[in-house]
Image (cartoon, rainbow, N blue to C red; front, side, top):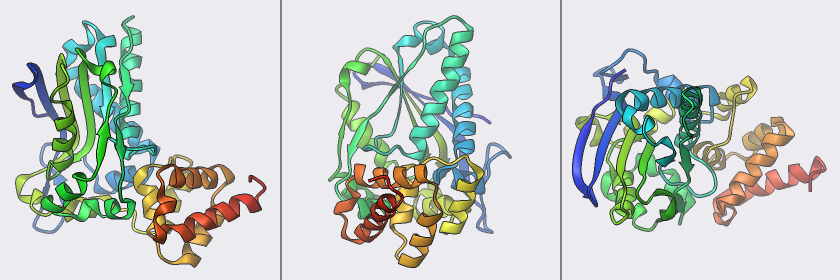
Length: 303
């Protein structure tokens, strides 16, 4: 696996900015999406990652950490405690990319501890979601619609954690660049020592014209509640933003009820808590599912 390295100066108050990519993706004539720089990319694996498979999140986190150690080794041999990692912003419920970032930090800190060096930090950039149901369809939107949605989203970050430090931002995919530009605009007046951006995947320019390709990637393996339950049964499942909205978007009450009934207590409770933490109970079309989860929790004696 290889990476691109673009260095730009004076973009962020003089900080040097590097961009790295683990998988360069392209769409073949037969519809398959492949990585042009390696044979080790699986659409099915990526789809499972986006839907809460912690085994894949850990694998990706380890891979991006190793790439950072290879390409930005100097950051971790001088003052690693000045290095802060962040995924792209989310509200309360982490994204798949945020889980990947957590595993990347764990891998880096394991390496640093073996070298008797200080640990790097992890930062949560906060995004207030103004319309959950619209945002759910974000992956299917063209660039101008993505920018319109993001125009109504607020992002905040703890400046004191990153001023004068080496900030590393991790995300799972770059297609149109709309989310990246939104986040980077927030950082432009913050004096960083350096800024490193690492994308797990980046689509080629031709594919970026068709943003629905992101949805195809997301659902290559996971297309139904039955598919999702296979991950849950594996014991390697963790809620993230996408998988929570995936369930809430299912309109068939009987199917959702059957799915929720099969969930063990901890996952049922965490699904409910994840939904209300992101204010999804204000979305009318989500209320039946949230009310059902609440009822089942009380029925099991946890109210």
